[in-house]
Structures are given as structure tokens and as C-alpha cells.
Image 1: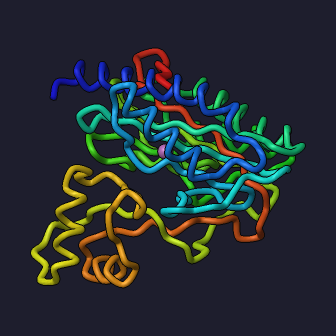
Image 2: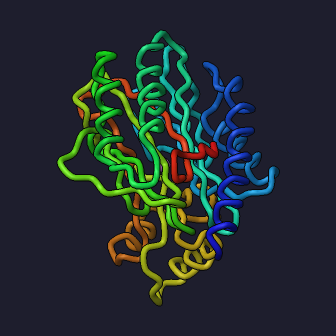
Image 3: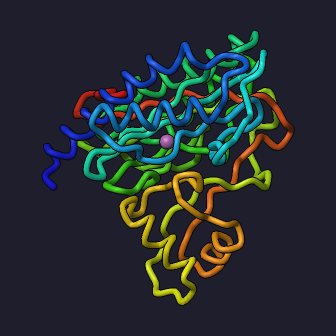
Length: 290
Ligand code: CO
């Protein structure tokens, strides 16, 4: 695919996400089911002419990433929740990725820290910019507001059917970064927390992606691999599949066929906010597409 076509599709996928973000925001309220929101987001992406690039991630309070509801999940939002929605859309594999935090309590500053850090980071983007300078801008803004950046969640490049491609864009000042190149599509996603600034797995997994295609003998395994073919290497949710027993999913992970994405939570159970935009690196700046 020519780079012009990649950019055109990135922009279109970004337009879809802009609209979905605005539509979903007022629906995230106490007593509303998480599943209802996830399905709304994913269906609207399809109705607007794209496909979900990954399951709608809904991370609440100290959860930071990779949570999506189960099939028939009846969990609801609660008063006071800090809700992160991380959503992605793709057109022919060309991805746009964005995230917002919706505050159902009184954590305005925490939410603002991630948003302002993202703004400052975007100001540092141009062809030739060093990713360490972007990380530094993020860290400075978040610390000045009295929070910590999460050091093991990062921004990233976007390539066809690959949600996390190089370059890695850290949320703090690193010794050595990499240079951004004109035309690169990147996502910057600062996370701010009241906790230690680090996430770990908390033992629930709903999201997977195909790692290596390999023949399998068990019928149930074959059926799952057949069903996930349309997603190619993009992440998918267990609830998207007709049948996905944990025992089979775990086996596919052990065999190196699937990759799992366990839910990541702040290690001190601090509250977490997130903001994310996808942008195209330009000669003198950046075009924000989400
Ligand atoms: Co992202």
C-alpha cells in the first residue's frame, strides 16, 4: 500500500473514532453495564465504515489496560469510577487508536494530567524529533500536577494489522530515544497515577491475538483458529467468539499460537487516567487524526 493510501485510511479511521468518542461519552454513567458500552463502541465503529482494531478496552480505577467485558458480563459503572475507554478502528488493517478518561467522581486533576501531558507531547512531534524528548515532556507535566507517569505502558507506532509497532514512546525521560520519521503513524498515550507508576498483571484475560499460525489437532482449537482468521494479527475478545473455553485458550497460548493480554493494574492500586491520540508525523509537526 502506498504511503498516501495509508495516511488516507488512517485519517478515515480517525474520523470514525472522533465520532464514536463523542457519542459514547454521555452514556458512561453509574449503573450502566460495561458490556453495553463496549458493544455500542464496537458496533458504531462498524456502522461508520471501519472495523474495531481491538476490543473496546474499559479500564476502571486502578486498572490501566486490557480489560474488556466478558460475554454476558453484568458489571456496571459506579459513582466515583475513573473510566478509561481505549478504542481502535481500522480500515483494511490501517489503524487509528485513541483513549479518553471519563471521571464519574472528583478526579479532575488526575484526568487533566494525562490530557495535558498528551498536549505537551504532541507539541514535541516533528520529523527528526527524539522520542526521549516526548517522554520527558509527558513525565514533566504529570509530575508537576502531583502524579506519576506509568513507566511500563507506552505509546507506539502503528503498522498495518499491528497495534504496537516500533517506535516505543515511553512516558518518561529515557537516556536514548529514537528519531521520528516523516510519514510515520504513531500513538502517544500518557498514563497518570496516584500510585507507584507501574502496572502488573492481575490475573484476568479477555483479549488475545494470533501470534503464529500453526496446524493444530484438536477440533475445538481448529474451530477457534478458523473463527479468528478475519482478525489476522489484531487483538480480539473472547466474547467475540462462539465458544472459547479457557482451557483451550490457555492451551493455544502455551503452544505459542495465541498471545494473551492479561488485564494490567497499577501495582499499588493507585487510580489511573489515560489520554491517547494517533498522529501522522509531518516535516514541521504532527497531524492529529483522532
Ligand atoms: Co495505543
